[in-house]
Amino acid sequence: MKKFAHGIYEGGVSAIQSIFAHSFRSALTTLGIIIGVSAVIAVVSIMEGLGATVGKQLQDLGSEMVTLKAHTSTEKEMLGMTSKISYEDYLYLKNKTDNVQYMAAKVKAFSLGSDIQFAQKSITTQIIGTESEYKNVVNVYPASGRFLTETDDLKRRRVVFLGSSLVEKLGLKADPVGEFVTLYGEWFRVIGVAEEKGSLFGFDQDNYVIAPLSTIESISGQRGNLGVDIVFVPDVNVAQSAVIEQMTQLMRYKYKINDPADDFFEFETAEKTRKQFSDITDSITFVAAGVVGISLLVGGIGIMNIMLVSVTERTREIGIAKALGATSTIILIQFLVEACVLALFGGGVGIVVGYIFALFILMVMPVAAAVLVPLWAIWLALGFSFTIGVVFGIMPAIKASRLDPIDALRYD
Image (cartoon, rainbow, N blue to C red; front, side, top):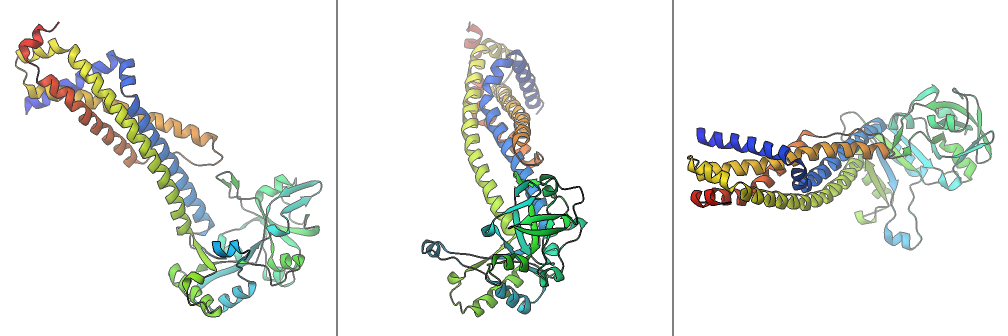
């Protein structure tokens, strides 16, 4: 056991000395491992950072929120047909669905034009027609002024609630409550400004206008005919799936749908969005794993080559060691440890390079996200590097251990 430990120690010291004595050669030898590990660390760090950002945004939006929206199959789209959920459907579900804490209808009025004007400035924005409970569903609260009320909707008032970024973009004063802006050629009074949410993947989440749904419908001349989305939050301690199932059955009963394949509606949840994002990140990580596999293979071959060269260069040294009593096992361990240290050196450098590269990528990307390097990714990178050292270092180590001491001493 003492000889075994001594062999590992000697192998480690020899490897470190070799790395520093031939630093350029060592860097080239481990280049494949550095590239592979840095690719993994960069991708995992970026994906973890973006995942945390998306999770926070979904939490802010309302992790319990569910959206019921129309869904048009590909076959119907090809026939020029479009599915629609009506305001009447919303009232039907609101009156008959149990265990719902908040529910609101909304319409994105893109078909009507999507510009807001103030003075000489015109800004393209997202115009949402909705009701007072919308703020409780999506957690939108005023930084100044107020949100919509039931009275605003009942009386079809021409009032708007602005996203925070529009205040600066339109050149409005810091507190624009009471100012008038123009939508669809009509004057609307500003009643409030939302709290800032920031951007996500370069998308400005504060560039929107909220107006009463009834007002949007009356301006469009399609009172009751505009398609809506229905957003809701189940009661506390009530599973989303139970409410979704009840709504599904109500819609199928109303429209006499017997085959689920004929459903013209679908539900979107925060969990579904997370899963979609997770599927994307998993795909990207899978591609990165392919890059890693190739790079680690190249790195392993590089280590094997340099270790074979090292065996040749140190033939006399091996002969002397064996003449002084070193066993073949000690020689094998020494060279195997040296290969593993080289591989771990490449893995360590790859981790640092990957982290720096991830920082650079997120600096130039239009998204505010932190670089998160999970501990499992570091251990995985080092574990792969160590494995590569063992796999590709074993052949040179065996060759060194099998050298005949007399022939080795004669080697010039």
